[in-house]
Length: 299
Image (cartoon, rainbow, N blue to C red; front, side, top):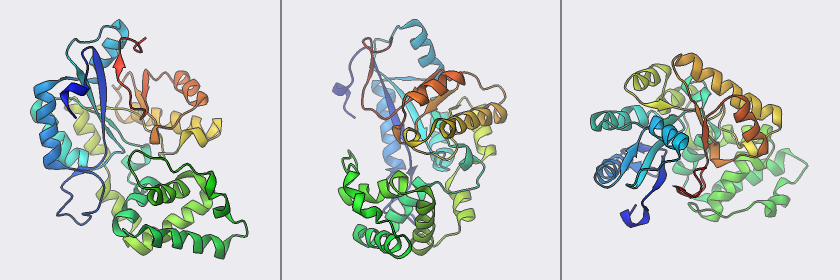
């Protein structure tokens, strides 16, 4: 990020996912940020920007007074062990606070999220056509309804991925019925990644002990749903379960936690989401829309 992209009296939220030593790891094709580059970014941010804590942001929203110096907020999604192993020690050393958004189930180390199964399937099998072929074969063999005939309804626009990658992600994230998605993901994960779900989950995600230690050192946590689902595609009661259960979970595991924020999985929400967040007393929420917080939109 270049300094001239940041204006005075503005706040930008910097969103991270995987932060690890990638190149020489077991998963060198994983799309993430090399730790050494994260170190460089933090050094750059400290030099050039005002790095806000979550409490700083709440105060700014309350008073509607933005710092004159361009400011940033650091957020870390999906509850990876990377955040405990790599991110937390550096932030602690630099006396910086970040906001972490793990879905409820990953902290309980019970599952591997669909989004992560897809990431590691794509990491291991770089030939996207082979994955699409596997999906087509499974659908044609097991289901009379030809789901792929409706594939033209899927938007393949993306800031980050090529069209084949986006097609795979959308089919396995929300386009296909949940039962079929689960079947396909389990088949592909077992065949391509070849790891047990239980072992993989424990190696991939934070646990409660990690979370409590990070919180004790002034890291902040917010809700990210239970299963990391596209909220806009869920019925009202399904959305309520995702929001309510994640709220209860964090208030239970961190009894002193107040002023919870919510981070929309995939940046996805609708009017029902907003209604439910107000019902369960969330202070604010984050999406993935590329836009700064400025004097014009802080109200």
